[in-house]
Structure formats: structure tokens, C-alpha cells
Image (cartoon, rainbow, N blue to C red; front, side):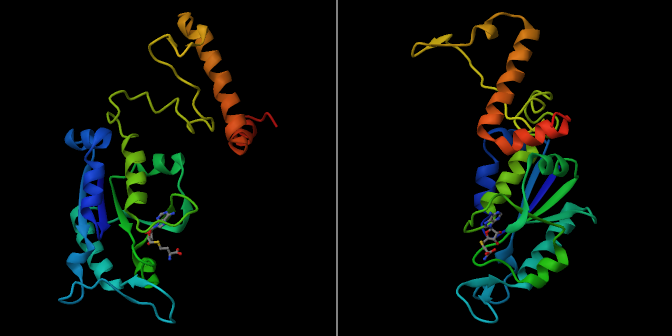
Length: 235
Ligand code: SAH
């Protein structure tokens, strides 16, 4: 899998991605990261990439041409004609684990990060295939949002977590949040680990975990729990 990120702040993307699990996945060749600095495609000697918005209003808007030329460069590097172009925007489809799984099947993804008030609509119309939002709030730029997508996609790639089966039982994989988990010591601040987890009876442990996952989901995410019940015809 290959990420091509169009950004005004490549350092932000590279520093964050090259740490931890995603950094290891990159070192192991499971994923590769490349950034294209939109500033390198500025329209004049002052390095301008933004301008005032037509019709007035506060703030600056990123211009078509620098974004478009940065996109052409990323597309060439990605070497994939049909490569999806994901624009990070609060006006996009809400990002989910399902979407992460879908993206993880792509050969390459071009991810576009906006700044200031956003980007001229015309270039977005021309290049973007997916508008994705990471939540109902407004960030100063698309970099943190892009990192959320890249992180969640990378950990689904075979070998990225070092144990291929680990994403299966996780939160959201079955419309359920994950059950609570414990590690050593067995007693901490007078709190004991649930006895059943020490029993060695795998069937009982599985049942306990399922019960806890349902209970937690019902309590913390009732709307998700309803979806879970509906999908299994329990409603
Ligand atoms: N004026 C725009 C917001 C611009 S925020 C509007 O009202 O829709 C600047 C940039 O930050 C955007 O271009 C986008 O790339 C990024 N961004 C902000 N909030 C985001 C969110 N919730 N999800 C994904 N990207 C976001």
C-alpha cells in the first residue's frame, strides 16, 4: 500500500507517521509514505498558494493550480491511473472502521489536506473521488485527519500488527465495542482481575468477553448496539 499525501506541512505527516506501529510498517515495506508539498507548486515568487475568496468573507482559500499540479505529481508517483483521491474535509462522509477496511484494499491512496478556509471548489470537483470527515468539528488543516485515515488503514494491512488475527475482535469489527482487558499484576489497588479470565476455560472466557462487549456497547454506544441487534434479527 502506498500513501501520497498532498500537504503544506509534509513534516507534520512524516514525523507522526514514521513513529510506532505505522513507522515499523513503513520500515518493513508493508506501507510506503510519500508527501508532495503543495507550496512547491505555488503560483509566484512569493510562494503563494492561497487567495481571497470571491464574494467576500473572512479567510483565505487555497487556489486550484498549486493543488492540481501537486496532484499530477502525486499521481505520477503513485503510478496508478485509477488511484482514489481522498479529500479530508468536515463536509465529507463520516469516517468509519468499514471505510478503513475498504481503503486498505487499495494499491495506493492520494490524500489531500486543505488549510485556511479550504480549497477552491473547481479543483475539488475535478480530482476528488472521496470526501472524508473525521468528525463534526473543524480543524485548522487536513493533516491530523489524514493521519487518522493512514493510521487506521495501515494497522489493517497484513503483518502491520505483527499478528494477523488481532484486528478481528476489536471495537467496531462486529458493531460491538471491545470487552475490557487486563494484564499483570492480578491484583492492583485491591482490584482483582475477573476470575473467569484465570480459569483457562476458553469457552467460558469467550462467553464472558461476548457478554461484556455487549454490555459495554449497550451502555456507551446505544445506537451502535441497536445496529448490532438489528443486523442479527434480534429486533
Ligand atoms: N471552511 C471550511 C473548513 C476549513 S478547515 C468549512 O467550513 O467546511 C481547513 C481544512 O482542514 C479543510 O480544508 C480540511 O482539509 C481540514 N479539516 C478540518 N476539519 C476537518 C474534519 N472534521 N475532517 C477532515 N478534515 C478536516
